[in-house]
Length: 128
Ligand code: HEC
Image (cartoon, rainbow, N blue to C red; front, side, top):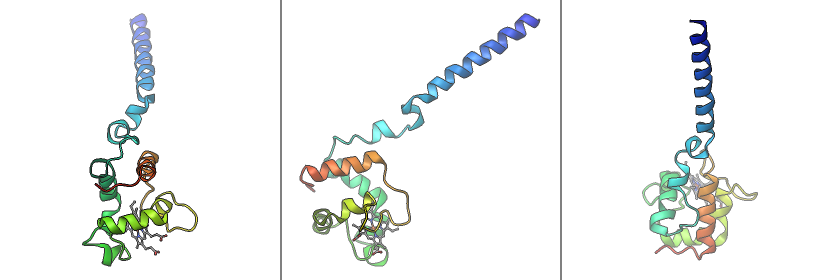
């Protein structure tokens, strides 16, 4: 009986160790990172717009810009281009000095999302 108890305690510790290693894996800690964000993929419709849509459109789409987004309509490609070219778009999401940090009142974008946007801008920031 005593021996059985020892064995089960040992088995339990093994299982704990094993699951500890399992959850150390980045893929399990951040389940939405690898699949959702690949900074080398920078097509506007597929990769860039969904990030802006998810994190900026609450205030900066055509419907809400006037009331919530200081009149800045990032759904409008011409306006988006202007803010990209001026550096304000990247400056605001990187929380660089001299720019109002965005998203306003929300958390910063993930490193991967920022990297994706940087690569898109370096690639010419096409909105096709
Ligand atoms: C909750 C509403 C809200 C969200 C979400 C939001 N913004 Fe803004 N944004 C504002 C407001 C309000 C201003 C004007 C701020 C000011 O002038 O103080 C602004 C200003 C800006 C500016 C001009 C900043 C400058 O320094 O000139 C840029 C660029 C911008 N937003 C980009 C973004 C981007 C990109 C996102 C998404 C990552 C985003 N915003 C998310 C409300 C928002």
